[in-house]
Image (cartoon, rainbow, N blue to C red; front, side, top):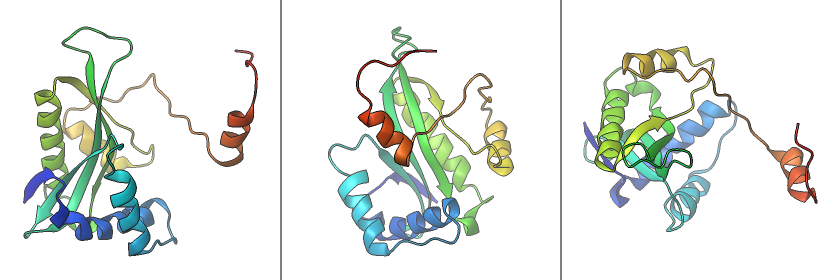
Length: 171
């Protein structure tokens, strides 16, 4: 197994894996290869995208897993030894490849990349009902951040807030 930053030779195989990811998060739904490939090339890999895509491959170009990361700076801790952070947006391993080392290899690569780029930590979300994923992360030595919650605005609520004018009363 090889772990590396995404290369053009990996695109088609990653498209297949991204379609699997879509099905994982949206059971019963599917998206076309063309739409996913366009999203990958035109958005995820665009010059303006902050994402770094790391892939685990078997055979020359068969992508069996990936990690999507961004590097950022802390707004609250300006010290040189703690000021940079890595955000793991997604870690996904093909269902048929789980428990065969790809996830651990990807996380190790991401940790090394983060350290080499001056990051003091890696943060990431995980679904609360993903017991297998939670156990995996804890085996890696990660600790659950108990004092944080995740929020989301979508659809009409997002647009309502975007269209709101003036100041808002804080609670």
